[in-house]
Image 1 (cartoon, rainbow, N blue to C red):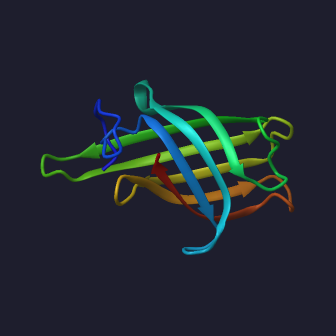
Image 2 (cartoon, rainbow, N blue to C red; image 1 turned 180 degrees about the horizontal axis):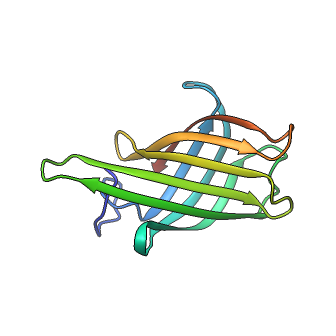
Image 3 (cartoon, helix red, strand yellow; image 1 turned 90 degrees about the vertical axis):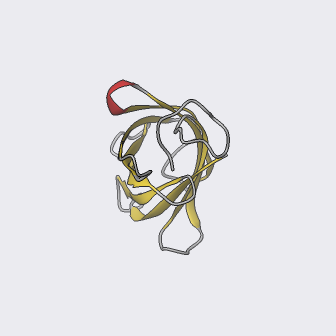
Length: 135
């Protein structure tokens, strides 16, 4: 499970590290958007997002012209049950009304999973599911 810890290996329980995201518009559909990024836990449930790069994208976001913010909170018990919430917003710096918002939580097999919504214009809108996988 994704959680707090100090080991950054592929089976780590730490959100810190390099991640790959795949966004689809259906449960098993092809990726609509994909990107890589580095995540680091910050104080108070904050999440530092760096090295963000779309690896496939439509015309809604120009390469290198985005800002990213995030949040990550965890809870659990001594029986090994860890749950958490994840949020991330990607905003176009050329058109601040174009935003990609991801909301989810701890997924299976050391992933973060949830739903995404793209807003901004009729050409830049959509929704679906996402999965973050540690690289």
